[in-house]
Amino acid sequence: MAGHAFLSFVVEDLELVKMFRGQAKNKKSDLSFDDYSVTTPFNSTNADYIRGQITQKIKNASVTICLIGTTTASSQWVKWEIEKSDSLGKRLLGVRLHSDSAKDVAPPALVAAGAKVVNWDIDDIVKFINES
Image (tube, rainbow, N blue to C red; front, side, top):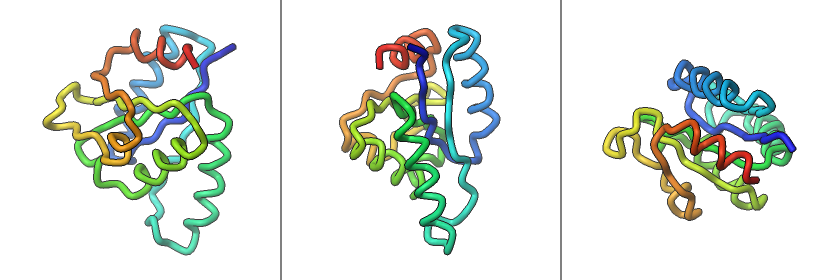
């Protein structure tokens, strides 16, 4: 079965996220990724609709990967995506985009869920995705 991951990240990291997707697909061509690049404020009038769309993407994934950059820990959307993934029983993995634990601080929700947090090592990450 092909690995399918939901990616949780902040829009400021979109260029690194694109690079991550490309590297992962180069390692294993049948991997697929879903995300919902949210630029809408967490408490906006569209938030309920967005939460519904994100929930469906998380349900369809076998694992949720939180791509951790310098501002990820403070994102309300990332917090919600991690908590929703955990409540749906999805495996969670945190990946530091800069491989620097001082710069890429794991979101508290990820730590609370007991997720493993690793540096960007695409071989190990692809293996994690395919184990699901």
